[in-house]
Length: 185
Image (cartoon, rainbow, N blue to C red):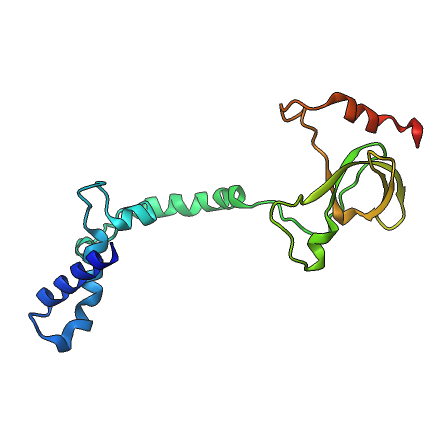
């Protein structure tokens, strides 16, 4: 495939430069642009369209002037504040602290991920689910695992647990009911 493309580039350069080897580099951008915008007979699209999803702007497209219309421009300027509000996203700031209630299910960030160790991409990002048993000062939570082991973590390492039942995936009901039985704690 590459050898064929090199042949096309060499052919275009020799035709453009009229067999003058000293001027080959001046014609290279035009030859490459020609290859990029030429439609493929096999797929019906140009490489430019396949890569960017739009037709390219050719140098001949700029020869005709686009008429200016002040009314259209004024409408565009009037609609800009509304468009800007639509584009604005909620920022993920570290100044907002999530609040969890006692008895809610959470997942805890795997501590190996923050230790700058090489971790397999198949290892779980979060561990759990855990049940919040106590809320301590300074955004520290005491959690209990399904094996009734206690764990103390900062709120920055906790995310909400979404059970499979809320996502429409079947799960083992007995396992979750064991975790929710807080009478053993």
